[in-house]
Length: 115
Image (cartoon, rainbow, N blue to C red):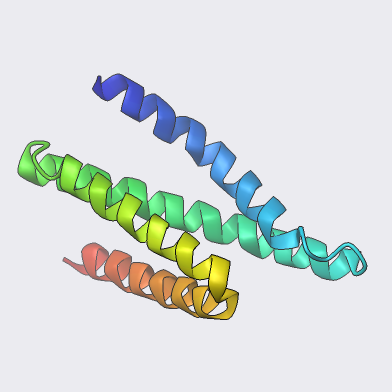
């Protein structure tokens, strides 16, 4: 079963930036240069977030012999559901939350590198 999980993460490594770029530039049909710039930022952000998530999964599974896998998966799904619900009713708050989560993820990566 683990090989399916690895295969899906490998597939998402390429699909996440494409989806992030398309989502970021989807609202800017009248300003193509701005849309492309935001698409590039969205793709980079999606790639970064996926890379951090994959790294956390590797560390969590290696350090707990796979016991943390279901908990990490549940937390990931819960956070996604919360962000989608907030995005439906208050997209500005979602944008702020995504920025804060990205900064938090960058700090976690930096602290893991120094440890």
